[in-house]
Image (cartoon, rainbow, N blue to C red):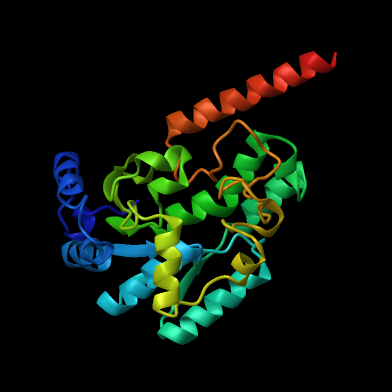
Amino acid sequence: MTDSAALGRPRINASEVDDLAREFENASAEEVLRWAVERFGDGVALSTSFQATGMVLLDMLNRISPGTRIFTLDTGRLPKETYDLIDAAQQQYGCSIDVQSPDPDELKKIVGRHGINMFYRSYSQRLLCCETRKVKPLDKALSGLDAWFTGLMRSQGGVRSETTKIAIDESRGGRVKISPLADWDTERVWDYIRTNDVPYNALYDQGYTSIGCDPCTRAIEPGEDTRAGRWWWESGVPKECGIHLTPDMKAQALQQASSAQTSTETGNN
């Protein structure tokens, strides 16, 4: 893995990141973006799955630093509406989206072993699918970078509730993980989108509130949590693909899923 020293850029340390997180806690998203672009230059990029938060950041970044790299992860099972939005964003902003895909040989191997819809069978197989289609392509996309932008918000709950605007991502080789919208909520996101005529995924108009792979996402019912439509058949485990889970979080979630499965099997005997 290429690191900062190899690229001639000084690695930011954990102590400095903690100070910066406190310093930028009350800063605007635009201020955080400007700081990061000035600090890291071509060593920072926006990772977006083209959800509403990602489109807000893309719009802001286009105004602040239109040359900053933008990449997305094409799992091979995204909804048509997401692909349509990628094209629309490139056309509207005149940007080039770097599309990262899973390793075809590795994907063929796990599908051959576990089936094309393996994610429905168990939590561990779902995480394996996500690992192959999303986590590993992300790690490849981050090679050579010092920092990356995410659209995480604390208001999304779960493991995201403690998100700071600037953090060390220990799961990504100690890179700096920057979440300019950490203190935003859904209402503020949509206010920005409407005010600035930002394109968005058409599935939002069909009751979707969080959009991932096609078979793993559905519209939510009235009163449900905004992430209830993700991996809708699961309960008692984080509604996450693994990108934003630390190794400890992942191990704990796997243990919870295993315990729940054992309890269910015992109850059915």
